[in-house]
Image 1 (cartoon, rainbow, N blue to C red):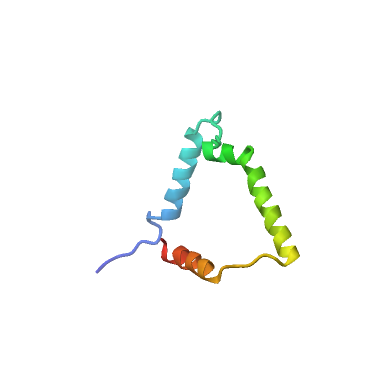
Image 2: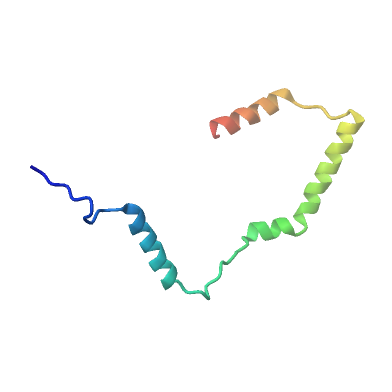
Length: 87
């Protein structure tokens, strides 16, 4: 017959995790800081290249407002298919 003692030690994973987190927090170096690095591509995007894009956007807006902008349905469908098929 197996005797179960309710007052004995038991394995509680939550207590182990909590103890582990406290130990890690105590051992961390408080002087470390998060660091952000901006890639070269992002730096180029922040520079003058955005002006070129803005000029394209403004030109497209003018065409849409004037009613002269025409969408090539085949080209748009191909772009959609390429996107969804991962090409």
